[in-house]
Image 1 (cartoon, helix red, strand yellow):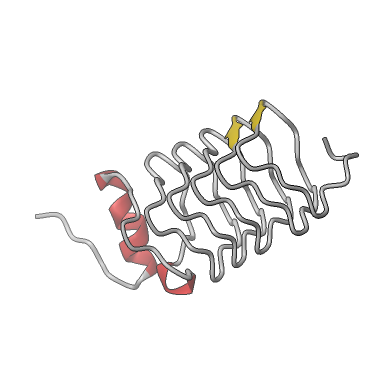
Image 2 (cartoon, rainbow, N blue to C red):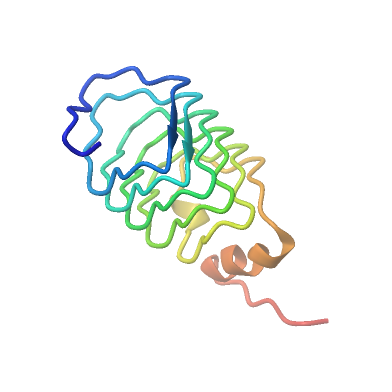
Length: 136
């Protein structure tokens, strides 16, 4: 997939299964409602990309630049978001349950109202805010 020109493409509602997009640069690409199952998007440039309602279940997004991306209501469950750049990204209503979210800083997001996480993930986000969680 890396040999395809991804500029100015409308890929809304398309489905990609087990695809390799490592290091791909997406420019003015719309993926709203698209499905990426178990895809490798590591090091991809997805800055300002429309990913609202997108399903990225089980995909690898390590060090992916998602700055200013619209991930409203996106399903990112079981994704690997380790060191993903999410500055200004909209994650309102997004599902991050069972995702690798180490380093996710809520204060740098463009929105996170209704963000879904598991109880076990809450300490990661709270620690990122400087809050110490102590056992009862």
